[in-house]
Each structure stands twice: as structure tokens, then as C-alpha cells.
Length: 423
Ligand code: ATP
Ligand code: MG
Image (cartoon, rainbow, N blue to C red; front, side, top):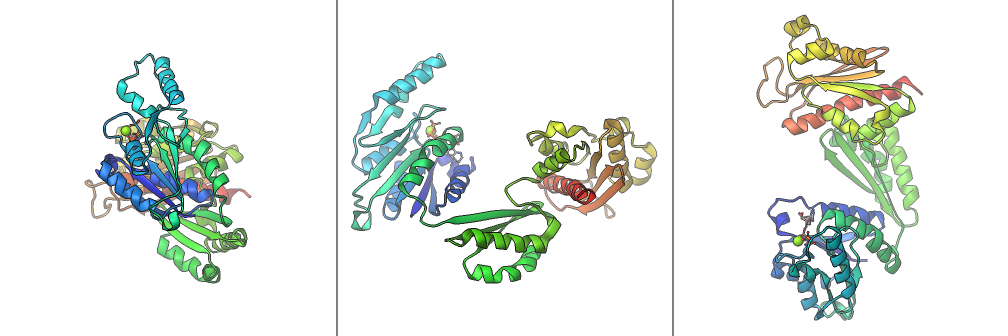
């Protein structure tokens, strides 16, 4: 199946909005067993949309177009595609009634421009919008004069707002595609997430052992992010499941505890799960990460069962006052030092009565570094019932990535402690 994706929107071309539809739709389509052959992004002009749709009509069985179905003058997708396929736009009474209900429920008047959203190309299928006003549309170009042998193409138009597009695709488009185009071959894929190793190091450790599988069609990919590397294993065909399973086993054997998830779980999700299973609790004392570790932990549903509380102790006074870090320690070693990190973690654990307390203190930069403690210096401490674990890192990043990397190291220190202390 040849599938193409066209994302429209001048805001995407201006760099003002990140094209998350590309990622989200490609992920969904991959999970359904399809391969996206091409993706293009174009601005909001009729000419650009027309050129992109024509090019796709010449090759693709399915074309998904996002954006430009709204009521404003820069929403041109519907018109352009109708004109291109020679379909008249007809007012659809059901859609208009839905739009009128939508506005009536909010006590707002229906403007004339809004009614444009009820115009449906002749022969088009309407995808009701459960969240907004612009319905999605499906048109089959059959016969399709742009394609050799006039082979048909299916055009799917989806609204731009993510909260409208996601449910529409999941509830309406995905089932339709599965029915009309059952995947030709089995597709299996697994993502293993690692932290603490660079991608070249990972490749060196696993590529050789996977060589015979990759020769037989296993697709092996790496995706490096700040503080973690994803290893993607995928295959097609009847042996796909088995091949991916074998490959995952080899990778797990070679990388062992560096792998923190064998599905799409985040490190914080894993940490919360491990703490929950062990019925243990966590406190957090942060300086240079400004609450980011607590933010990540509290992004996980169910965190309240394990996370007791935390502090952002940015000043020396706050470290003393809330965590009981002795003034002499800060005076003798500095706020960014191993003894301070230790005292912060011990103080946080004591104050909250938690099983574990994580503390971080460091120099995010770009200013404030010294020869002895360059920008990026971080001390991480984990206080436990058995004692303290300490880590020293130098994270050379801008401030935001510095927080990300430091939080990752702190969470990983906790995860390693949790997996080694039990079972
Ligand atoms: P509306 O009725 O809101 O005008 P629309 O179907 O015309 O919907 P657009 O105007 O293209 O869609 O986009 C609406 C919103 O969706 C904007 O906030 C836009 O930034 C966002 N959006 C559009 N396309 C994308 C994309 N590819 N990735 C992320 N966000 C997008
Ligand atoms: Mg719009």
C-alpha cells in the first residue's frame, strides 16, 4: 500500500508550530502495519496544496491531508481538492445542523463563514467531528486520471487541531483503512530504551550479535535523545514476531541493566511502578533542576501513592532552612558539592519520613563555572535506609537540556538502586 501524508499550514513552514501530526500519524499508521512512503509539508496557499495533492495522486493509494478545513480565509484544503477532482461543493444539511447545535450549546451565533464547513464535495464521505465544527472528509478519486492505469486513490482530509484530529483518526479513519486495506504482511516492532550509554557504544555492543538477523531483514535503528537512546527493532513477514523477539533477547543480554524499558515507558513511569510494587516512598530536594524531577514524577498517573513531597531549594538559606543542611558544610564545600548533595538528600528523607530521597545540586550555566567546578557540574545524592549513594557528573548542555540530563541521571540512580536492592 502506497500511503502519503500531506500536512498543510503556513505556521508549520514559518517554524511557529511543530508538525506533531507527522509524528503522531506516522506512529499510528506504523502501529497499524502500514508504511508511510512520503510526507510533505506545505503552506496555506491554494497553489502549494494543489501541487502537493497532484503529486500524491500520481503515486499513492491513500493520501491523508491535514489542516485547512476551518472557516477562515486561509483554510483552503476542501475547495482546492474539490476543484482538482472536479467535484461541486454541496451544502450538507446534517453537517450544518451539527454546527448549529455546537454553537447553540455554547450560546454563540453561527457566522456565515462558519457555514463553509458544511460544504461537502459531491460523493464525499463525512467524518463527524466529536470535538469541533469542521468534519473530516473522504473522497475516492476513481478513476484517477493522474495515475498510471487510472488506479484509484483515497483522499482523507482531517482537521488541523490535534484534539479534533486524534479521535477522528482513531475512531473513524483507522478502522476504515483496516477494512479497506488489510495490511499485506505482519509487522512487528519493539523499542528498547536505554540510559547511561552513548549510541556508538550501544552499536558496538549489539550490532555484531544482530548481524545475522539484520541480514535476514531485521530493521535496526537508533534514536539518541538527551539522556537516553532508543533501540528500535522491527521486521515484516511471517517470521517478524520471532525475529524481533530474538533480537530483543540478544540486546537485553548485551546491555542488561542499561535497558530501562522494553516498551514505550518513560523512565519516571518505570520508577513510579517499581516504588509502587515495593510499597516504598520518595521525597525530592532539587536545586539546579528547579522542580523538573518532581514534575516528571508527577506526570505519572498513580504518583501520589509513592511521592510524598519535595522542595526547590535554590538558595543556600533554603537548603539550610527546609532541609537542615548545616551552614558549615556549605561554607566549607560550597552549595554545589558532594557533602551538600548528601546533606540535602538526608534532610529530605528525614523531613518526609520517606524510604528514598533524591537530591541534586549543580551549575546549569552558562555563567557561574570555575576551574574546579565547570559549568555542567552536578552532584546527585540518593538517601536510603542502607545509606547514601552519590554521583558526580558534568553535563555540558544548555539550561533546559541540562535539567533533562540531570533528572534522567537522578531517576536512573534511583531505578538502579530499586532493581538491585530487591529480587
Ligand atoms: P480550524 O478550524 O481551527 O481553522 P483547520 O482544520 O483549518 O482548523 P488549521 O487552521 O490548519 O486547521 O490548524 C488549526 C490548529 O491546529 C492550529 O493551532 C495549528 O497550529 C494546529 N495544527 C495544524 N496542523 C498541525 C500540525 N501538522 N501539527 C501540529 N499542529 C497543527
Ligand atoms: Mg484553520
